[in-house]
Image (cartoon, rainbow, N blue to C red; front, side, top):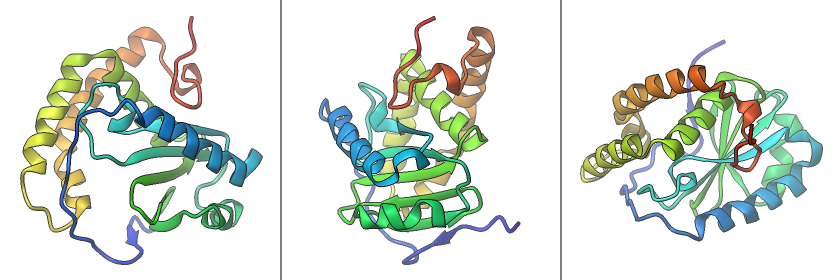
Length: 195
């Protein structure tokens, strides 16, 4: 399988705008979650709020990132038409991952395989940043510094965060190991199952 990313519509030059955490973001996620759930029904195994807008207090681009876990992300016939009918537009196609977004560019819907590494990584990263304010602060500082630069494409900004994400992810993995964290201890929608 080819490891290429197809950007439908090509590269886009957009400024990276970071804003303070907005208390309205969880409600916005809930509305979008309901819209996605209505469109997909049982085809979505879980629908989670991920990304910086899912971490209370974290500086973020005002874009709600939503992760939808399905049986097979590469089987577009199982979900793509329903999401397009609900108003989302396909933007990214790569093996094991699709990203759709709203025409207003303020919601990104990531489709990933249930139980896969994409799902696990994004849930763990979110949960660790929620649990560890020091790493959330470090992440915010790197994002702020990178956002001050002019990027030819938003994907290049995301790629520039690789080192800090890798560093934080290593600590998150150690935490997951020591606490027994897993995606199964994370409630779809964003919370944690009490133990």
